[in-house]
Image (cartoon, rainbow, N blue to C red; front, side, top):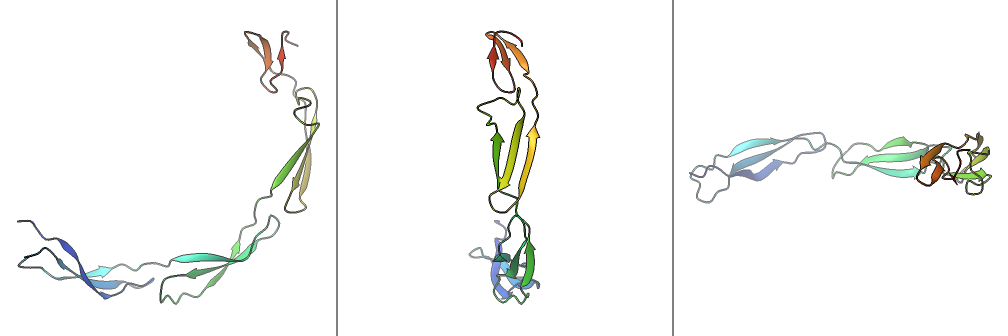
Length: 152
């Protein structure tokens, strides 16, 4: 005996976003003497929400969007939602530039400007002094990469 090969034969009531549906399930194996038709409850599908942008957010203001269900026949009303404020898009300027002078020996002024809005921030990275690590060729600063034969 092979046993039954049970599958949905026909859907009697389509499931929706919020309501279950029904279907008939039976053995579809050719030559089955007792296909044993059974009613099956199909679970509710749940909403298939999509978001469309009405007003795009920026780094200083939130935006607006609309959430709607895209399932055919759904009666869920569209809902207006708030879109989160975006992060600033920061452009940093180092004075003096890092490649010219190491912050190990000189303070560095950092200027941050957002390229999308008027946000600006300034702060100083204070000199730290070299952090010498001994190597086979002398000493190397682990912060800036400078080499020296002496541990200064």
